[in-house]
Length: 111
Image 1 (cartoon, rainbow, N blue to C red):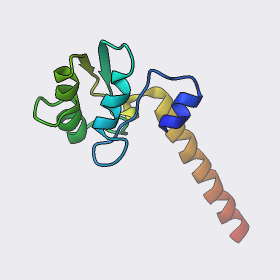
Image 2: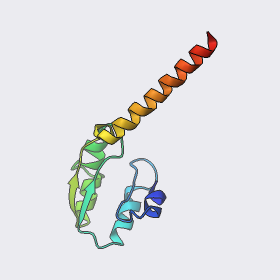
Image 3: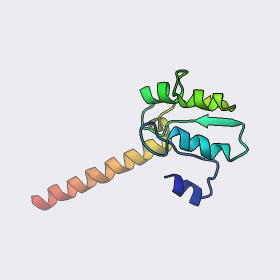
């Protein structure tokens, strides 16, 4: 996903994971190469739950927010899951309609 963002011209976006790669350290390293002063953290999850509230926006050790603040950045956390976005909702609705249409087609061929 990171590569796709960069190839599409979104050089100011970084994607990281809590339990895999790219890690927080990977993202911090990439951000340090730029001239950024402010960081916006937003979960790339359908629902913003424990990971968003604790791992991303929490004040505890190991949280992304704390790590970026300690590195000298002003941090804004957006606790909003992708499922709250109208565009994403529309994609889910379209996929559901397509699935229902395919099931109806199969059912009509069987009868």
